[in-house]
Image (cartoon, rainbow, N blue to C red; front, side, top):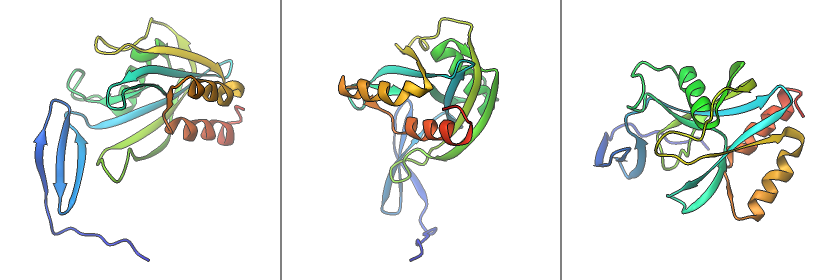
Length: 184
């Protein structure tokens, strides 16, 4: 069965907040990030094969979540000409205090194709080194965890047992590390 593509209706913004737009397109309703050109996620690995995770309270779900460092490109608070790679480097440094030795794009796709028009690009940051404090910007309170890759699955399971939400994209990033990068 082929997917039907409908192009006759136009997108219409029905509500706009500080950061999000609520949009309709025919019978579909979805959200769109406002004032940003891209979303980046960074899978950061040290020379000693340790993976960086961030932990922070997320108001939409009302719980603490474990995630990879992530953020927006050109989100209004930064350079309007920021590239996606520059945003990935900035977000990694801002949230974790680590700088990437090398950065490579590993995947790109929808954040949640049924309810958001935004795409996310995931980068692998190799040989990251601690150069600053991290912890996020003035609106964030982020804890950074450095976990040996071979212990990551067990660590994530322990965090889940403690009531933390685990961002599903973590599993895609870890799969990529173990399958395509000989890092396990």
